[in-house]
Structure formats: C-alpha cells, structure tokens
Image (cartoon, rainbow, N blue to C red):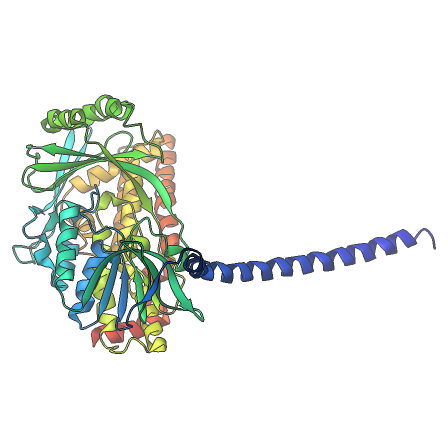
Length: 531
C-alpha cells in the first residue's frame, strides 16, 4: 500500500494544478476584457480629470451635425464635399489647416480622375499647374519601353494628373469650406466618444486649447497614415518596406513628355514625374526602415555615388543639381491591409484604414473610389440616426470596396517586390521577364497598364497577367534546350512568384477579393448602389 500512495498523491497534485491553471487562465482573460473596456474609456476620463484639475472648459456642440469627419486630407476634404452636396451637415476637424508639405500623393491615375469627375471635384486640379499624364516609360539596363494608358474609349481630357500635393489638398479644403453645410475647423481629436459600445462623436482640442465634445450619428476617421484613432476601429498591421527620398528637378524635360518614368535601379526603383510647369518630382526608393543621414551628408553621397550613375543621361545633370541644392525630403512607405473592427457609428477611410506601397500611385484612386461607394450606399438612408440601418450599410461598404481596393493593393505590393533588385537568380529572371513582357506590346502591355491606371480593376486580370509574366520567364529559360539547371531555375521562378503574390492576396482576403458574391452583405449592397 505504501508503494502506491505517492502515485495517488501525485495524481491529486496534478489534478489540483490543472484546476489552478484553468482558474488562472480564466482570471487573466477576464482581466484582459476588463482592461480593454477601461482603455476605451480612458481618454474620456483623462479629459474629465483635466477639466477638474485645470479648470478647462468643455463645450458641447449644438447636436446639428450629421457626420463628423476627422482629417481634411484628400480623403477627408473630398468626402466632406460629397456628403455636403447630398444635404448632410458635416463637421470636419483637421489638426493643421496650413498648407501641407508632402512628397507623395502627387499622382492621380486616370481611374482616380474619373472618380474625381464622378464626385464633381474635377475643378480641384485646375489652377494648380497640374500636369496631364498619359502613361509610363520604364528603364532597365540601358533599355526602355513606353506604356500608354488605354484612353481611346474616353474623352480627350481624360488622363492621369500629377501636381503638388499641397496645392491639390488646399483646393479641396477651399471647396469644402465654401459649402454652407460644412464646418471646417482646426483641432486635434483626442478620442472617440463612446456610449454603450456605439460611437456618438468625439472629444477634440481646438486651436486655442479649448476642449470640445461634438456629437453625430456617424463619425468617419480619415486622419492619414499617422492616425492615432485607427486602433479603436481596426486591427492595424503596419509594415514599412522602404522609404522614399524626394527631390525636385527644375527646368528639365523628361525623355517622354507627360509620362511617369520608372528606372529599375539597384537596389530598388526610382520614379520621375512632372508636378508643375517647371518641376519634376524624383522619388528614390531606399529599402528598409533606415535611410542615410541627411544632416551628416551621407544621403547626398549615397545619391551621387550609388543612384546618379543609374539615372538616364538626360536627367543626370538636373538630378545632381537637385542633390547639391540640398532640399532633400524623406517619407516612410507604409503598407497596411484593411482589417476593420466594425463599430456602430464609426468608419475608417483613407490611409488611416488601408495603405499600400506608393510605387503605383494608387492611394488616391482607392480613397476616391471608397467615397463614391459610401455616397451611393448612404443616399437612400436619409436619417443617419437609424443605427441598425446605418450599421448594415457600413457593413456593405467593407464588402463592396474589396475587389477594387484589393486589386490596387496587390498590384502595388507585387510590382514593388518584382521591381526591386535581388542577388537571387530566380528573382533576377522574374524582374527581367517582367520588363520584356511589358515590352512585347499588345495585350501584354495593355492589360498591366490598364490595371496600373485604375481603369481595369478586376482581380482575376491581375492574377493572370502576374503568372503570365512568370510563365513567360520560364519559357525563355527552356529555349532552345531545357537543361536541368534551367529547369530548376524555372521551378524556382514559379515558386518565387507564388511567394510574392499569394501572401498579399491572403492578407487582402481571398473570398472578399475574388468571390465577393459569396458574402451576404454583397447582395444587399449591390441592390442599394443600383437603385
């Protein structure tokens, strides 16, 4: 008996330990839930504490607002104009109404320009020296090819537009502020106002430091890539694959007038495009999250010794002169798939919600497409205080936007990886095959450039052309004789291509991207939009 006693005791000990572990786990889960609820109310409590401690004045608005828009960038200003034209009373809160100074958001693809026309905002590109863009020229290893947008079926004024971002945004803000039912105010939104799990408005600090609370049945957050509110409305997974180094070349003509120029350089692409009558923007992509120091002169040295020798000779002198002038800017390139956390009374839009590498210039096209969609969805709903109906429409928005946004996002991510230099022979072959495939002309160039332009946003077309490039690369390897080495390289090329595009598609959502009709909200949304 004594020999068996320790075994019995050990079994009881294990049983007790298991119960204790389960209890601890449940306790931690309960604590986590409680902490999450506390965090959601923390900002409101902080404001209350400041009020009692510092004697600040908390002023409530009169409650006559239908929609609060946080941020007045491209998305926020365009959305304010659009909703106001439909009779909504809109309150826009922007943290800084002075003219912004950015080096991205300067190229609007033809598909985005068509959306601008659809919103009645095409005059916002007038009077800012916006340049027409008719396609791209791509350079690689001393060769180049021109790709023209497929604009034959459109009116003569339809093309891409490139401009100073700050001028475009100010025109949009001026247009929004001119509408009688738009209140455009400078202030910093500190937190969303939540009641019983629903967003009812927000707390913000005015330009003169006064704490305010404003109420509306719908709050739309589009405060840009540096959003401090997105965590309450989505599950952000932000990646920074590279940074852009921006320069302005003056009084220089591009080799192909009214075209963007992409140089497939080492280690990554370089972009040129006109932004005014006398200026050309140059964006040098630097992989990774660290860039050479501008202050120490390392950046200028890097641009002159590594980048300048790879630039077309027509642009070399102007590029070096721009570096010597010293007005060098940097901007991290962020990527973030849309992963909404549906919250009654609130919506995310623009770069606060969804970002992709800016190589393809698709960001504004996504934002303007989203605005057209949201406008069409909300039009039948005259009373935004109907929380149930509003929630259903917002759910439809997240589903219906997917095919368009996912196509642009996937194209940007995949093209950037293909265009970057790599020591891997399979990746080198894929890059070379992509350039040669685009140079073939016909459907081999028209298909990809129609995707890039935002005029053809069918995910299946993107998928087929991407793997057509890979198969074209394999075919070249197997001619005239398929040696074992070439067969192995071809297999690695296909594997590498799959490794590029499938993770991006997975992050975007296979079902929502390719089979949106299988999502119940799709039918409901299509019925509303078609009315």
